[in-house]
Amino acid sequence: MGVRLITLDDLMDVYSKARQRGTKFILSKLHWKALSRTKSAFDESAVESSNWWIIPKVRERWNLLISGDPEVNYEAFMMKEYFSEQHGLKLISLGSGTCTHEIELAQYPNFSEIVCLDIAENRLNEARKIAEEKGLTQMRFVSGSIYDFDFKGEYYDIILFNASLHHFKNIPKLVEETLLKTLKSGGKLVINEYVGPDRLQFPKHQIQAVNQCLLEIPESLRTRFKLKLKKSHFYGSGWLRMILADPSECVDSSSILPSLHKHFDVVVEKPYGGNLLMNVLKDISHHFVTESEPVNEILQKLFEREDAYLLNHPSDFVFGIYSKP
Image (cartoon, rainbow, N blue to C red; front, top):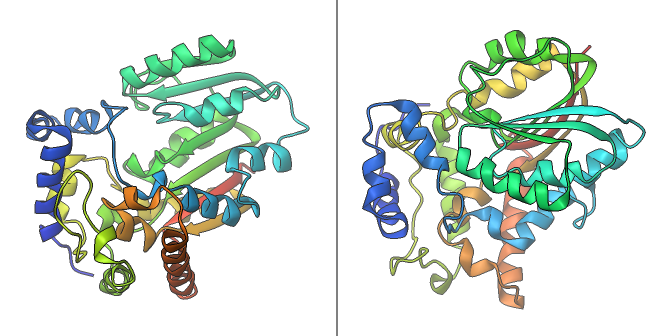
């Protein structure tokens, strides 16, 4: 599979971001420091977007594929099925962002300590306020890099990565030199992650399948978020824009599952797709937030197309629990 350096979608994304987030955000991508460009991608925690995760029916689909129930999310699923009898648990979430998932987990009585580590201090400050309001005294918020954090040996019962592990480079080294060492024997690694191709360099057959899905959507529902332009074709992301926009984005994502399978025992692994839906619905998801019969029918067709695609291709997104031997 050849590398795409730049595509028409890259140009559209720059234009869209300039309209949606302003020229200041675009100029931040010209900073010579890679970490500064990464931080700029996460600093604005309240920025509106039109990505697939804002669609209620999509989130119900995730729940169904993970827990078997569209109303039960992965947090409730893992606590009921795998941790309900355990207490005094120590959890660390690496790349926790706004800590939404960690705050939900902290409301279970099973935890004595939950540490949220992230480079975006503003997001942690918002989460800290919410935790204080809820009286979640077992939560601790640390602003900084995983590479500077002082990990205690065999200390944590659970390490959580929620849409963050794919931002770390050299996954095999991270697993061997950090994760395995700080987990207790029998400790669990929990991921809810993108595990697809590095830098979103999707194969041609996947791009073709995405474009076939776009044909299922009426033109009236393909107007791009905050723009008057229609989404008529998907070209994929170019390598150059991926590095400029966020050097950490999907830097070594294809190594995640092979590394975990090598060093951990699989407790449960639930693929939930995203191969087509993420790319089809990017920038037009706002049309599908409000449910109606026509919208639900279109989404159901898209779900069926993705299910058919997944019969012959590995899922780009996975929820999994892995145990340290």
